[in-house]
Image 1: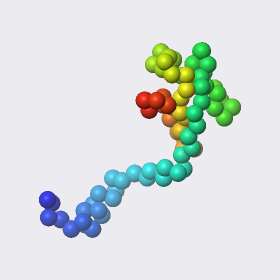
Image 2: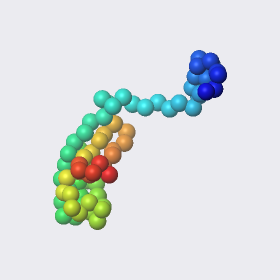
Image 3: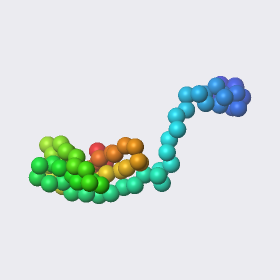
Image 4: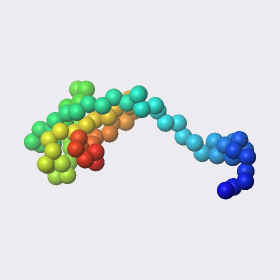
Length: 77
């Protein structure tokens, strides 16, 4: 218990908050990579470390317009 007024605490902590895009601004696509670990996405080719994902040939790509996040469709790693 801090015994502080929440409004005052928020004003103090507000400067440390960062903007996070709403989840609905993120598109998600499931793709396969070839034997060389290459994924084609929106006309670009991306190299995937197949040593880490050799058991899974499908990955999920999440795109928020600024960053691409590649993850295993089964483990989310």
